[in-house]
Length: 603
Image (cartoon, rainbow, N blue to C red):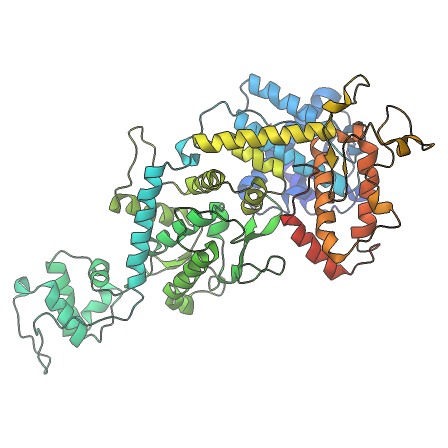
């Protein structure tokens, strides 16, 4: 068994070195390695991901897919062009369901495996595996277990308490950036000749130490205890602090002096950024100084560039695209984010001067107790800072042992607040960085939101289901009353009933009674149509929602299938840079703007 595992690891590592850009690049299965071609497909997805957790998911998914295929083909060589089909993910879904019933995997992890396999199948389509152009997307597995406090939105009282604590800490840290103001207090401890005037250390107070700091130490804090032994001034200062049972950092900061920038100083700004953006904590940890863009070319608004490991890499988080009166936003979202970046940059400026080249551009840079410079992610220092923050601000555990303050709770809280304020699902999708609307709806459906938000989610799900049903329903029965049919629309046309066209269309030779109108939605092919640059974002949005519909439903098997395929052909002729009459820059700008366009085709 050990030898078999070693061979598996060796073969996996070998396939990682082999490129996979097209179907012909695929490794061939052998008698001793019947799933070699399948493994090669998985390694191609594995090596483009930088997250260790995601890479582990890819490996685990391969093992499960391999077992599933072995159940059907035993030890026969597996060729992707023969085993992959439009029902591949459905079959894997059924396999996972059996594993769940046998208690081999948890239902939550089943969703991770299914999602990972979906990404692998998309890779198979990208490399043009023969006879495999699309696949059906099954529903996600239900979450029977309770959503823990780690992913539950904060209630109103907790939000107010946490917000108050964050603002208080930010104000305290911000004061440390101001120039030091001399107090003029304390007694003269050492005379002009450098002689000790007061020799009894027990009678000296912290105010006397401050006199030394202001008059003999040039208001410059000494950072390590070893430096307190060099002169009489420094050793006296050290003795006063020690005899009063105080900590250097606490004393300095009480005077308004920044002793060293620790994770404790950065934490309130980190929490504030999580609170006002709802971004994934991993994405916020990885932010760099130049990730804040003042003006995005598509929206003209500020945005954050960030990396989302479990998605398709670098993304842009657009600020100020929603209008909502949220209690934690006293100014615009962009203003808050810019203030955070500016303050943190000032706070860490000294550290950057002595940090390594790799660290200089990191946003979250801090110093450890022994003087080492670190940056996030660093769970050890972050957890210590969180515990200090909880205790200092009395945000402690609940009766059941769950921690009230968790970084993972800011994202669902942000979404819950947006929903309660009436922000559209499409805007929430963009803010969360989800590739399509279905991912957003699943996210909303599995989290424990407040009652008002839950009602909104239910209404949106019903609306989405209703609109999809009206567009991609099963083949209609001729006996169904025409009045029961709902209209289907696109950016360029709306038809009251595709199966009951006007008499002028029925008189055409190509019209077949009972079949959908063959001229429906062909506006784009009409020689009289005029398409300008301003129409392009709508067309990109239309194509996007068609592709989402194809991926997530069986619409191509319905009477609407030929309509969608025809429209996609027309759209490609307009939007494909190799065929379009529009320039590449115009098309790129239009595609970015299409993210903010809602078509009536899908929602």
